Image (tube, rainbow, N blue to C red; front, top):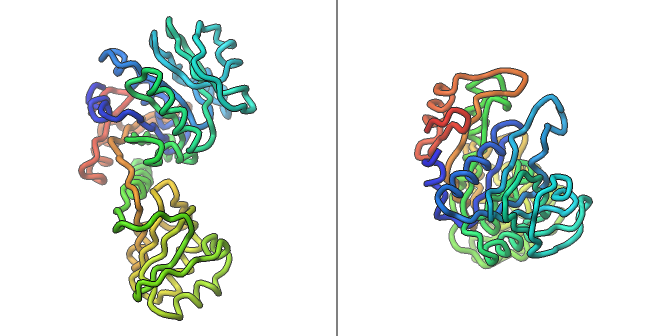
Length: 336
């Protein structure tokens, strides 16, 4: 799997995000961790959430890949979880408290298997990553699921690897379609330079900026959206927070076919469930970002534990065809 590591080795902070449970996120992380160690890199590991349990928390019959920190590696977790594993560690930093105990950064002189439980916010994760780099890590791996997408924010990670696989759906075509749309979100085009978006605003054709209410940006004030678009021409909306689907729908209706762009900080702020970015784009509503995510690769796991298996080569070939320019690697069979 050296090709996968080649794609991210230059990135100090590497996010590994899974499309769903059991799509190979942990296996991808372990592959990178092992290969970076073989290359003489000191690597740190953290997580937005928790990973490294022996068994799946929903289905205990599913055995999960172990996270083994190589000798001299760093990990962000909690001391109770380290004591449960009986690993020898050197505490380098003690942070805030979580339900699982205080977050600590430790060096494992002899290595060992661990459960990783890091901070839950993007800001705290960014601080932990920087601390591990300052303490001697060459690379930091950030574990995060697609529903904990803060790990992939450009403010947190320098590169991202997206793990997908058979656990998404029994149909190869459905796995490909869902993966392609997720990748489309992470590859949204970059907007022209804008002033920092501390507050959400509309930019008019006149150059005037109109501040937007929180209710409007949350999609809770459709009448305000109609009123906004009934006045001087709106060029685009710049959002300081998340982009929710009700707002996108309301803008599409109020703009009445006129081209409108919605500008968010980065792809992790886009939350759509009913329609896709592509669907709205065909209706002249374009979503752009101020900072792009560097998607380094997609990894595939053709096995859905306890369920079904897809043809590995066919899955990799179809995802590659749907995502031109994106490297696709099979973390189970070592292909790609």
